[in-house]
Image (cartoon, rainbow, N blue to C red; front, side, top):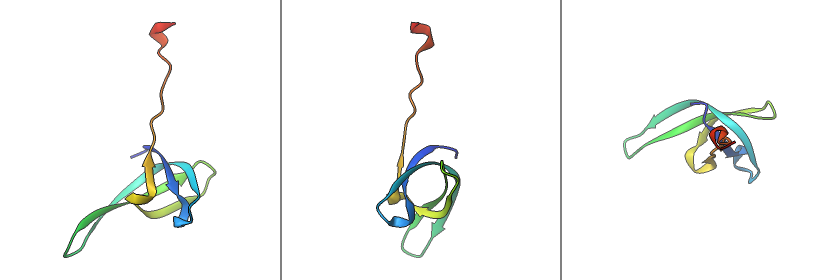
Length: 67
């Protein structure tokens, strides 16, 4: 949790930065999958975002040893 992401807000094709605040496992007779709750950087939030609507991002920190 608390991973940095870009998420497709309400599947409308607009991607916004945020963090994962919860993970929910969904189970049916034919498959299992995860949905995520996202807290967006602008203060909005969204529950049960499907994995195909999320890109996990990497934040690179400066190498302070190289300074």
